Length: 196
Image 1: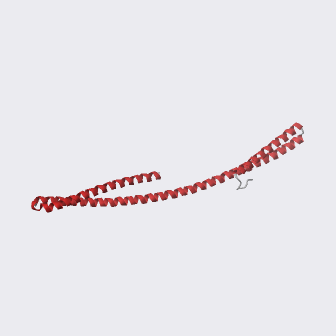
Image 2: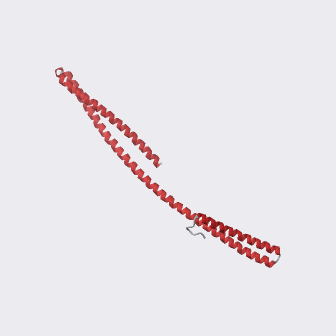
Image 3: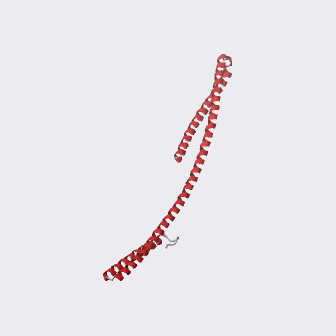
């Protein structure tokens, strides 16, 4: 019988030896029976038959022990493989959970940033509306009071400059929100693909 620590090559050699011995026993029993038949003696035939039966039983026992050992080795290999697969599955599961946690954090931070930028855009739009109202009021005052045209024109230019700056800020914020929404959509698609 092979020891549990025997290498696969030595187990194969031992199994091959067992099968060879079993075949040799069967061949010896066949030769004994054939020799007894040729001799023509009933006593020799009876003894050869008994010997053939004993040798056949021994060959069967050897073959049976070989089969049992093969099954044990295969079961041991399957158990080891199952253990390895379980460990691999646990590792993959932990990696997946970590990735999902990381992606959820990234998505939350992106959504927070979008929320903040939308608030800033709202404030910028309100300031733009206020600036436009002020600009309109300044224009009406300029029309009503031509004698104060010099001083009012400076205020008008200042208001126009602030309006232009506000328009630029609003455009930049709108572009940044569009870019972040696109990036968030891409991350969500990557996350969905990973979960699929």
